[in-house]
Amino acid sequence: MMKNLQGKVAAITGAGSGIGQALALHLAQQGCHLALSDINQQGLDETQAKLSSYSVKVTQQILNVADEQAVYAWADQVEKDHGKVNLIFNNAGVALSGTVAGLSLDEYRWIMDINFWGVVYGTKAFLPKLEASGDGHVINISSIFGLASQPLMSGYNASKFAVRGLTESLRQDLELTGSNVSATCVHPGGIKTNIAKTARMTASVKESTGVDNEDSVKDFERLFINTPASAAKTIVNGVLKNKRRVLIGPDAKMFDLIVRLLPSTYQWIFTKAVKSRAKKPQTKAA
Image (cartoon, rainbow, N blue to C red; front, side, top):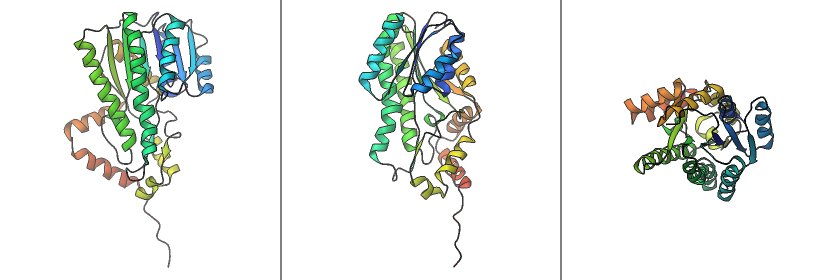
């Protein structure tokens, strides 16, 4: 169990905004050095500017986590720059909404490349380096949609369920082999980030619900009841307690409970909830 973060080195993907940025700030407060990555340079610069008052070393790298070679190269660079790596937060992710019939194979590949393969690359690239540090931890960000499926979210659900399966099995592997590295799977509820605004949404959403994409985004954002700062604090506390699973927010705890109590019936409940929020189509006068 990692007792504290003073002098440790943490690598974070998706560090330019949201949970990633909040993690960077919270870790810096604990005296943890940081290697930040994001696909957006402006976001990285904003995060680094917020860290200027902390006495920790901060490096940054533009990174597309779907690029296997780039992720491995970044891991090598982090170890070279900092001398070691103790923690990897595989946080970068995207969202996708549409019916299974309405989503293309390329759209499924897009979200899996980032949300799942990006986590696989980050885990595999950093794991040997975490072991070499003598005290390591892998933190993979899933979602409440990795606990329970939702209508219109098959791609996102699939990617986040996959992250959960990978991380839970990884934790067991590490225990089986007596590794000095541990692993935690994180399931955030609705966090006030830009993920809804940057999500890809197909025409099948409106076709199946009657709700415009813009209104769908607004409906989704109404569910964002947790802040990135509170999420970061909960995640780091979970790491220090060596938790296998971290649920963030009352909504995540509710989802977890519903699935435990109603493992099949919950699907019907969630479908009814989406239908109740959908706008009824307007009837044109003859």
